[in-house]
Amino acid sequence: MSTPVIAIAQAHEYVGQVVTLRGWVYAKTGKGKLHFIRLRDGTGQIQCVAFKGDLPDEQFEQAQHLTQESSVIISGTVRQDERAPGIPGGYEIGVSSLQVIQLTHDYPITPKEHGTDFLMDNRHLWIRSNRQWAILRIRATIVKTMRDWLDDHGFLLVDTPIITPAAGEETTTLFEIDYFGESAYLAQTGQLYNEANMAAFGKVYCFGPTFRAEKSKTRRHLIEFWMLEPEIAFCSLEELMDVEEGLQRAIVERVLDKHRAELTLIERDISKLEAVVNSGAFARISYDEAIRRLQALAEQTEDPEQKNLLSIVWGDDLGSPHETALAEMFSTPVFVYHYPSAIKAFYMQPVEGRPEVCRSVDLLAPEGYGEICGGSERIWDEQVLLAKLAHDKLPVENYQWYLELRRFGSVPHAGFGQGVERTVAWICGLPHVRETIPYPRLLNRKYP
Ligand code: 4AD
Ligand code: MG
Image (cartoon, rainbow, N blue to C red; front, side, top):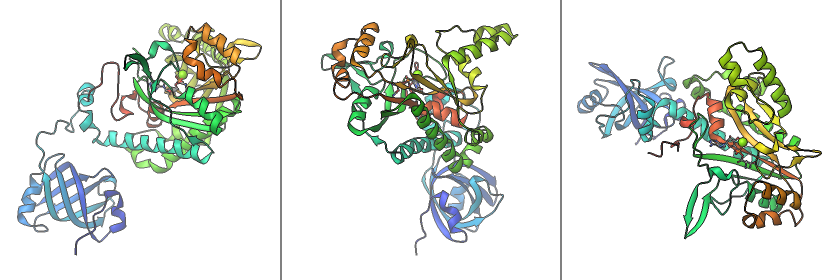
């Protein structure tokens, strides 16, 4: 009778039984009659114990010479043993047969320390490493939670195009492509189409890759990133913040629930995440108040360098040191709303009676991970929108269909975009976004 082929993550269900596992050698130790093979299969890692005499001699011989990342099929008995290392650990395999699929020679990534550039050049292999494995699994759960939560709250997924005829955000970061002799651009956002879809379906979202030809080399900017963008009819800025807050709580709760092992592996301070779900409502402050708080902080700061970094006047955009300083004032994420219109996108609704600020809101992650969501109420009056397009020198002819949305049953509406990579950086506690996406596209990197 053949043994069941199982995943390492299922091992706990098979204690005392003989099973077959298929995967790769993460590490091998031991000598003489006893060899420990750390096997990984993508679902976890388990220690396989090869003891001379328990398996045919020529197979034991092969076990002795196994190398890192060799591919193998192993059969043996599952044993429960608290001390057994692994992910999640606590189980091991008493090996009774070993089949080598390919013996690997000179695997470039060894347990020793490597430089970032070397690892990034070997990203196609680096993703096999423990830390990267943990991060990318958490990423998948974050994406799934985003979609599940919206699906469960009455939103419809409606896809938006990647190739677009006009800018959705600043014209300075457009990726131009040749569209059969005409100019087209890679989508910076799905928002404008979301607004059309909102009028057809009420509550919608799109989820996909977005592109910004941004010549900045910060820890938070990617050239290609994934964005979740909900858009809601008859929605105010306050209601939008409620939606954003509910979604963030769901994400943190789900990751805490499902990924203790991964969070431990990457040494994330879990108490910081627990604080987000256990403390009350997220803080909500206006841009005006943010500026006042930052100026007061700068005033009190004695270190001249820090003082200089924090200095800000009304009208300036918040830089990374400002976002970090604001985040440190709260244990939850913090909403900053009503930014100056001059530093925000053309489509944002001006505040009534005070058009120099707009009905916009950014959500800043705790601990200095920066802006994770950007959103606003949208201009829904055609004349106001026309004036704004002219003011921002955008070609009106490209926005005819967008203007039409303001002519046929226009309604107040609002939406936001949440960057997946910034969210992963926050949840996983990563200083740089490059490890938050399988194959990062950065200013100086498009390989592999
Ligand atoms: O604030 P942004 O530019 O907003 C928009 O694109 C809106 N049209 C979204 C909407 O209202 N539907 O981007 C939204 C989020 C940011 O908060 C950030 O998390 C992420 O997208 N983001 C980036 N992430 C990585 N690299 C970049 N270059 C990013 N630019 C924005
Ligand atoms: Mg933004």
